[in-house]
Length: 218
Image (cartoon, rainbow, N blue to C red):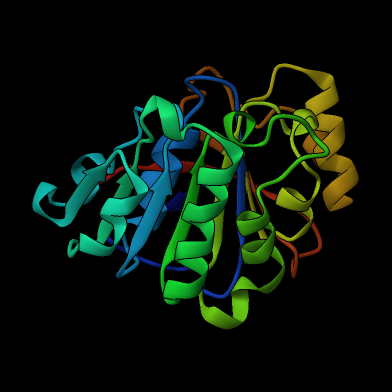
């Protein structure tokens, strides 16, 4: 079953957290681009230094910054924070999340969570605030990772929506089965030879996940 997305269309409420997982090249970054482009405001912590909104957002609506002290000066609706080397610390990451938390009415993205949380037991306090209390401030978190088994469980357990692309390691798929209670996620979502952008979609209000394919606008 395929679900079609149109450019700039928003379907997930800005009071609900989302989690995306998949190996390199499986489509999770495009998923973040396509689904978050429809929100009025969004800010991404990009520790991989390569996230963009591509063709989903006009370049004039995106501001890339490398220092936290630039945040108050940003007028564009989409922000990408690519921290310079001196700001690649847990303290700076936490400050970014707290800025989103107190700004309110802004979507917060994390790409990639393994680079933000040094191990499964450490999470920036600002991110913890968003995950546990961000809904009331309309600050949803969209987190993405290649290795679900290597990040804090809170990043997944607080999510209402899951986009699960191809994961090679069984431990990662088992982790998602444990978090969601969906045994279907032990299988890869590929459907036939054309496996590009295939994923499992799961809404915690549903009884089971659905196999989908992200169809990009032409």
